[in-house]
Length: 190
Image (cartoon, rainbow, N blue to C red; front, side, top):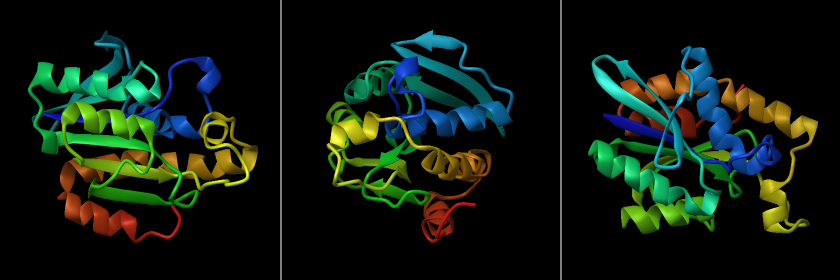
């Protein structure tokens, strides 16, 4: 069984913000596979499907970003999901807009959602897909990540999330090393 988690903040006011690209990414995958987030448990919206005999859960925590770990750990424990079968998808200030960074482990990089997940999982070793949102040092960090994106940025991120179907299917097929080799070397997702 695998748990794929897209991070974001719940509520209309956070749609199309930089912090919600994790939601947008798994929404695109769900739509491409005719899946609806029509189940709710442990403060999370989720859907599930079988892929080659394995149960896959797509999860969007419905607590605010800095409490994401509370939802993730409840799903992990309830479904008895191994740590190596958890994938977290989130925004990343330190990666250029339009690029992806896939990692096995590492620091949260100041990302409050990842910090909370690490606190609840008691490790920094879990798989992640970080979606670049760049960093505008002229703006307050919080205002920047929860601010609405201008049209040109939205268009770039649409191109990234349009690849969700291909990337997540590859995640289900390839080793994570091969997945990292394939997508970390791409300049810009088109």
